Length: 99
Image 1 (tube, one colour):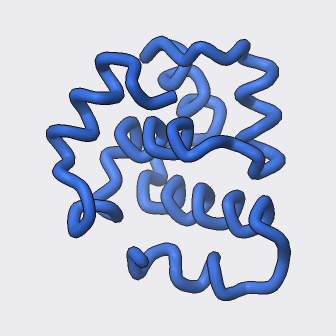
Image 2 (spheres, one colour; image 1 turned 90 degrees about the vertical axis):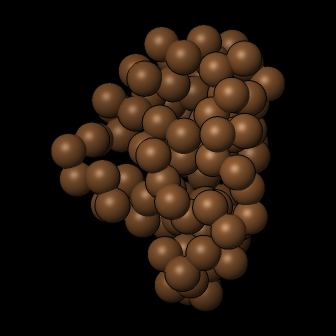
C-alpha cells in the first residue's frame, strides 16, 4: 500500500470514508488543485459520467477504481509507481480505458 494512504486506510469507518480520505490525501499532495478543478479535468479527459454524478461519487467516496485511477493520473500522483507503469496508466486514461 502506498505510504500516503496508510493513515487514511487505518482510520475507522467504512470503505467510502476511507476512499474519501485517500482521495483527500492525494489532493493534499497537489495543493494548487481543489476538488472542483480535479472534477473539471476529469470531465475534460472524457469521463463518461455526468458532472453531477461524478461530483457526488467523489464527495461520497462511492467512485470506482477506474475513476480513482483517472484522478491519480490527473494529480500526477506517484503513489502507484511501485505497482503500475505510469506511462501505461496515462495511455489507458487518455484512451478512455479507465473512468
